[in-house]
Image 1 (cartoon, rainbow, N blue to C red):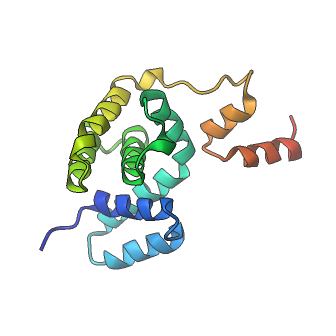
Image 2: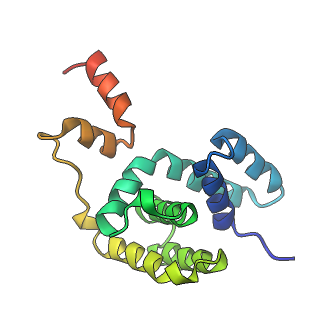
Length: 168
């Protein structure tokens, strides 16, 4: 029997959510229920990776679009979620070495039948690792709504509503 891979489990769940096959709360509950006997630390890793990737999705897509010639909305769902999940580990999970996040992403791309895109995945992620200091956000003065939406990974319509309700 093949040992489960926590990153693969999260990737599959993110892809199901992306394809609107499952709601996030139900999906996470099912994931944790299926793996209730794995060590608590691994369940915590899966939970943080899953929830963090969803919470930061707008920001992650914005960053990935800066480094990819093919925009995120045009990517295959599995590759899109693999890039998001891996970038979340690189930018927000400091206990995960960037090299491990990149290597695992390439392995998963190959395992899921995307060997032809494994170099693409590797190239984008390693380029971001090398150039994290070059990530730019929209200009806060010229585009305040876009800036707030990306910075806090909030849908623009929520930011617009808040600005109307709480002007400054």
